[in-house]
Image: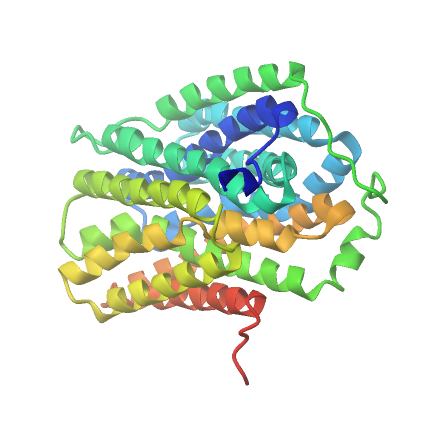
Length: 402
């Protein structure tokens, strides 16, 4: 009976699948390190939560501004060159932390983070759709969830190792230069490997023109894709805002100190990673749309419990939310690309504009700084999960009546 299950990938795509999946660890690390860098710079530079939220805003602004240029570049030069350029920008931005530390101002670091964000969007615009192409269509969602599981592993590693380094208890903690310099060297070496790797391009009938001309206009007439784009943006608002606010929230509530909070968020991200692996396995037999609806419902319930502010129950609910949200990004991404064929690369570049949703943390930070209630900002991620649930229900044919 198991022979009736479509394979996760096929032999000729196995090596490219492994190589591309390794990249997911890198940008998981790069994005999660922001969640501890945020609190570290608040302590080190004596800035507010609202000011430190510019870390997320600047990084994800790189995604927003460079997503379409990345799509055009990948249309012209292919997935492999998109990966190499992304790695070079990523590595260069990380190495810029050395001169930025000499300048010694908060805004100098923002420039380096913007360049890293530009590199990450090239990586993700290349790798996410490429993974969906490396095997049978039926297992595209499961395949992307498996690759994204390594994104969770990178996130876990960043918050624990770098968090312990930043919040070491010494005066000011560790320097931001050390982790970023090590990261920059590793990324540039990997760029060299990928520049020599043989990654097959996936062709479609009626392929896009090299410039992608007309592709974006055609996508405007795909309502399910547009709903998927909105759902992915809503998810990014929720996920990034919660991650960025997590340490501020649990320390502000007096539940723990900075160092223990960095361990706790690592545990939450471990739950997230487990959710990705479980989701990849479950969706071999359960429809992706149904799984998304179940998980979105779970997230909505969890955030409502956080808003009720019932002590340990809220803490458990906040942690469980990481389990439910784990499959959302790759699942929404794959579902939004379903059936787009030659429009896939252009559609992917639009989907990769959605991390601009990380700017939602700016609003959460503003509410936290100006309200005595640290729980109130969670209404923002709650709204995001409701949109994801609506998208899942639409795909299931259960769109609520007006």
